[in-house]
Length: 156
Image (tube, rainbow, N blue to C red; front, side, top):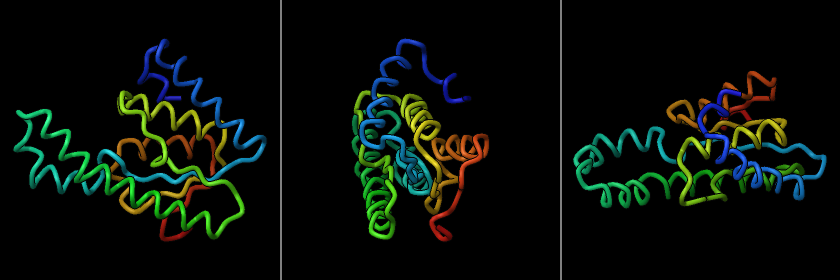
């Protein structure tokens, strides 16, 4: 898997411990995974053009505003959509917005979620704007590679 190249062996081992916890929730069942932009995507592109590029010299303010203006709204939209799916489905729904590990890098998240998808997912639903997200692009390539059912938010 390409995502394995993003993280060193020591970090992989620690992240794999989190991955194993999913088996206690899912057992032998496979889930639907919701893929949506979190740290980047179209909202990030618009924000960066309007505000972010002016804050590059102030790392603290950049991080704070990036979280408030991009990450938090993206998390809310993913959670809302995942809850809608749960209301219309009898299968488990994996919502990446429900898991935050504040000290992980984006590459560690990509490795984590790609590991989850490989082991526990049968279908991925890509939210609108997924193609602007680095993580979603990894998830899409993985889904194609392991032959998962891939859908978009509009055609779930």
